[in-house]
Image (cartoon, rainbow, N blue to C red; front, side, top):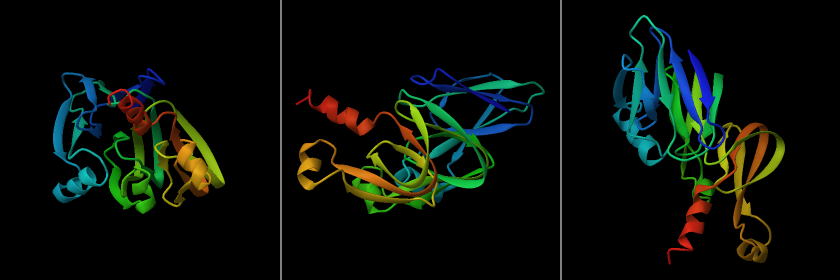
Length: 220
């Protein structure tokens, strides 16, 4: 199997080359085109009840599609995401990663998709009470609105709400005001997330909530 990301960083999409017998799992609306000989099967995302939890708490689709190459030749699958932005491919080797709601695009069939309690701080920050957790072995594809920045953290780091895409579950997230009460309310920053721990995080350069707030100014 070979994965290639093209169109970065604004209109990224993924080309998956599946060898005979290989399969790949993707969100229900991620496929933009594929070889006509490729077989596609829609199933609940981890079973009916787990699919409901991921749908309502993790922000993911109720169904996922499994694409399998049952031929004797290499077939292509093109995947994309709803928002304009970058796409990253991460190789899991037994570790886990938390991914913000709506960022998951696709993964190897061997990768486990679960949910994790994110806390009330995440809910207040607009990220929801639960996070999607990917674990196991294999490739995971996730996207972002805007460009993706990889950053190694060793200690503490501040991220504006809506810009954190993925992080290791061992990291501790705390919600706080950007500055003092007056500065946070009138400086436009509001709440930020303090990340504590050691490991790699993924950030997006744009925020959907900020875009929505900017558009709403012209609608009322």
